[in-house]
Length: 192
Image (cartoon, rainbow, N blue to C red; front, side, top):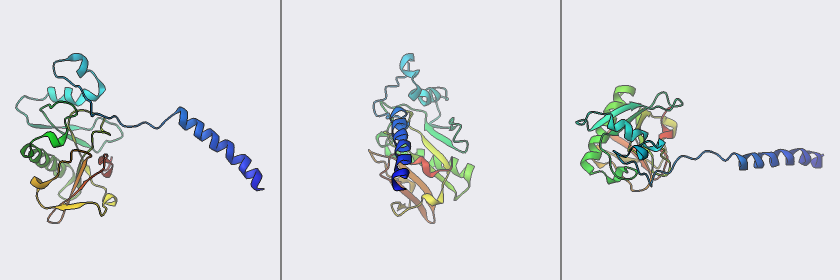
């Protein structure tokens, strides 16, 4: 009986291993070596430069702007972006602290407008999993089940961290915010 079960299971497992080898899971892009150069049509035509192109369409005086997430699998998401470009992957930690604070305040205002005072979350993914070079913050409804013991309590927006490696996830709690760092992908804690 056990031999017969093994004869049935082995071909199935072999097929799955073979199928996976031929169809590896899709991995998010690594944008650490971005080269989106404003004014260079060839570099700006790359898929990973599409948010840079969107930034160029914004009024010159706008510091930040909002877009609905273009991914059809994320119909309840918004993106907050700075208008300005920086070299490479536009990392959050490379922006001056005052600008980061204004970005977070702007993103939180957008989040409250769309999701209310207490149900929102904002997330910045690390460079290794982002598919776009231009800095952007995901805005959505926070999934309470994503709460865990690794979150740190931060009272003021000015004190939000900007890690050189990995992303940032923020959601409101009484008296301040819970902030999570250390992981590359953070947006999965937001409703799609």
